Amino acid sequence: RVPGHLAVRGYGGIEALVARAFANREQRCLGLAARACKRERFFLMDIQFPCGREDIERVLPHRDPFVWMTRVVECTPGESITAELDVDPDLPLFRGHFPTHPVLPGVIIMEALAQAASFCALVDRADEGVLGFFAGIDKAKFRNQVLPGDVLTLSARIVKSSSRMVVADVEARVGDKVCATATQKYVLARSEE
Image (cartoon, rainbow, N blue to C red; front, top):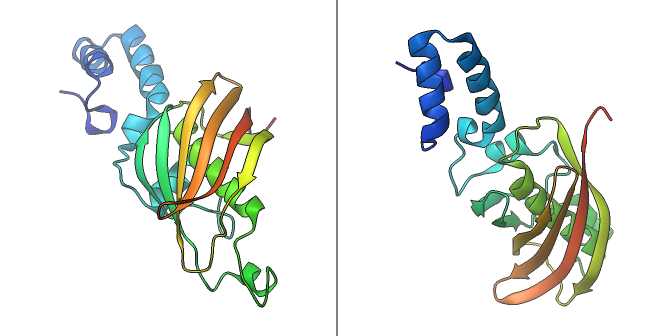
């Protein structure tokens, strides 16, 4: 019997390796199983979609006041994501941007899109402590304003991914109106580097 904390649902290869390791008390298999489970931390974390802020913070290092995703609606790890941001009318930034006509700044929209894409890229990686740093934003276009009280839909499609670099095509919408699009690039590095 496989101990519960090592059980991995839906991944027969790892599950079988863990079961064999414990059944036969094979040290080599135990080591391989532990490394395999670490590589598959997404499945060990058992995140189900849609998911909320608690699961987002299990994957991303961001914390208040700089978490720009409210929920992940759907995600195919390493491929695509749809997330949402409930734009809180009480955000302090609206007092200054702009007092007579508050709008969510474009840089915050780009950051929210980067967080969504980073979640998608990092959720199935074994590298805890890896951060995604902006390396570039290409072809950014801002088409419609995002207002207090809006629900901003954040979509990203990973077009290139390696151990050190991720490129994503991103789009932010309110309803059926496209608010922003871009191609974003992120360098992945450990937090202690």
